[in-house]
Length: 219
Image (cartoon, rainbow, N blue to C red):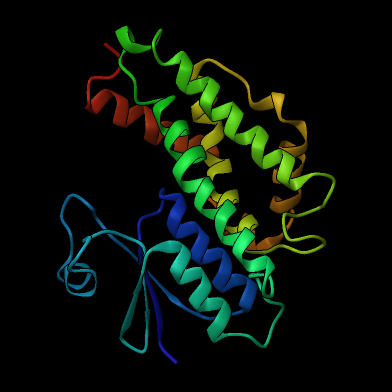
C-alpha cells in the first residue's frame, strides 16, 4: 500500500502523523513542501485548506493532522492502539483539541509579538503556562496521558516540545514551572518514534528567528 506524507519539516502538526506512522511501523515516502510556492500535488490533494500535512494512502488524501493520526491508528490496527477505547476516547479527543486551541495558540503568541506589544503579551505567557498546567493536571502521575503507553494525546502534544526553546527565549519565560510535563517530554523523547520525528529545537529556534526578522517583529 502506497503511503506518502506531504509536509514541511518545522510544522508540529505533521510531526504527529510521522510519529503515528513510526509507531505503527508503516513505511512511507516523505515529500517536503514549500508553502510559499505550493505544489500542484498539494493543491490537488487539499483544495479546501491548501495546507500541510496531507497523508496520501493509495492516492486517497487524509487532511488535518489529528484526523490523519486517527486514520493511521484505525488502518494499521495490528499494533497497540493510540486512541483509547470507548468511552475514554472522547476525553482523548478533548485534550488533543485543547492542545491545538489553547496551548498552541497561546504559545504562538509568545514569539510573534512586536517589541512594543511585549508588555501586553505577558497575558499570553500566563495563558500559555496555565494551559500547560491544565495538561499537567490531566497527566497526573501517569507515565503518558493514555496511561502506561504512548497514546493519542501524547502524539498530539509532544511535537510542540521542539518549539518550547524558542517560546522561552523570545518570550523571556520558563516552562520549568511545569516539572511533570517536562519530565513527560523527556520520557517521550526516549522513544525512537518520537525522537526521529521531531525537529531539532535549535533549528526550530533559528527558523523562528528568521521569521521574526522577515516580518519585522524584532523592531
